Length: 91
Image (cartoon, rainbow, N blue to C red; front, side, top):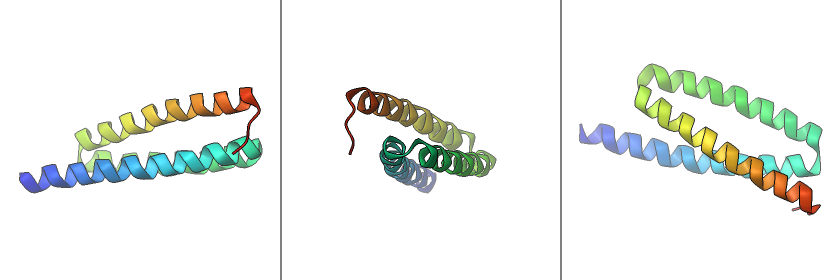
């Protein structure tokens, strides 16, 4: 049982770091070129759906926590991009 909790914790932390890095790269690409940003976002969403599908087969709790990470960091990225575009600043 303890190994499962440790594994879940490590996977959630890893997912949090990876999603943060991917969304930071996306915001940079999107501010510079919207077309490339949408292509990057489409690829990221497709990979995320595949990842969620695989994780939900293994554990619903882990899949739900990954979905919460995706949604919450996506909302934060939306507001960051909105602020950058309204200010007219680039990275």
